[in-house]
Image (tube, rainbow, N blue to C red; front, side, top):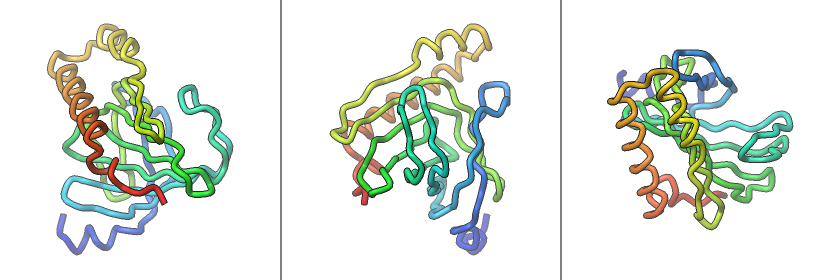
Length: 170
């Protein structure tokens, strides 16, 4: 994509589509592209309705989400802020690299998640689900290795507080 085309798309409305392995759509939500730089896409969104999430608990309307996706990395990062602007938490997915066609940003979720508190303590979630799906959905050895490498890279970023964990949440 030419630099001019990427700049023209910034600010554009798009649809984020989270899929499960095999292509089944798991969730979709509207967002706005705010930055596109090399393989990084940053989108902004806000929750219009109350959501009850198994790991995140109650998410109230007006909660703001800054989402970081890469077309060459095996994870995505969500920074959630309360309607007041205060950092709520980070939530990260281990996933296949994102794909973006100019209107839809999609990724395949590979089950493993990392929940990060405002003090940067974290929990790795759903490794059991990853192992079960690796067997039942026949994840290739290469896919499993890439997912594990993505998790290691993600944990390294968290522990070192490197981008985007170095950004102020205001």
